[in-house]
Length: 133
Image (tube, rainbow, N blue to C red; front, side, top):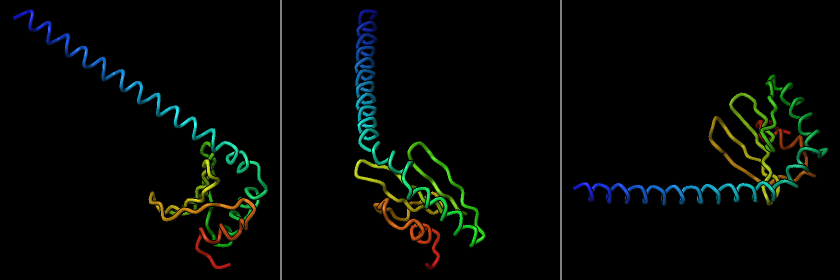
């Protein structure tokens, strides 16, 4: 009986070590994919942080929010720029294809659209806050 117990323990140990190796490989592939995504999005992230569009967007968000008597909270979360007013959020997320504007209410994504960093920052703020131009 002891021989069979040892054999069963050895098989379980072998299975668990194979599973651990598969998990490590899966995690390594996930890290590599995340790194490749971040590298591809890096030029757009840099452009978002340094562009005059972003400076104008922050200025307009403050101005329009003040006119509506709404405090607009601004935060950088890594490469993502988040603007938050009441239960609405606007996140500008760099991707390998460019910057995407993501509209959220509460924790639910309402819509997303590609963002032209040469466009009208005030119009984006007004669209997000739901005010007429």
